[in-house]
Image 1 (cartoon, helix red, strand yellow):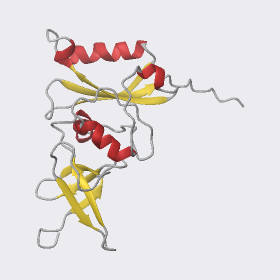
Image 2: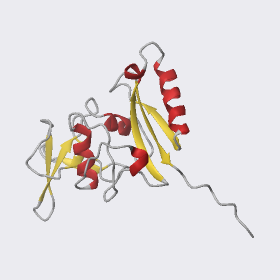
Image 3: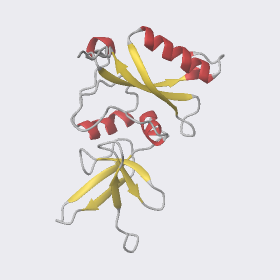
Length: 186
């Protein structure tokens, strides 16, 4: 960074997600509507060598459980440029706005995932333990919720805690109605 004034943004391991390198590195997405913010988030502008500018929106992990999961090291979120996403649970628009930045314009449907997800599709769910049962330890709540998912043909593949960004939250990622592996025949 020359003179500290030039923003440097590099790709994250998850396609469509970036890291703004500065005094404090920040997760960000390419702003689908440059010049606009959704929740008063910080924006970073980068000038390309050809003179064009690209604007990124900083993705706050204290406001987005998906951002917290990415920073927590989740291996795959199954959300990338061009994928179709059924997003359930849009509250303030923080996460859904960044998901929309990643995949392009997204239609948000608050309907039953089992109705819309295709066989072999993937899911990402955030679980807030004390909203389900505040009398049980968080890990026991997470385990019980994962078991319920399994009964509904969801196959969890990974789980990460969202500490230190969110207390008693976990993010679970996996597949839905995953095809049985075919035995090789000779």
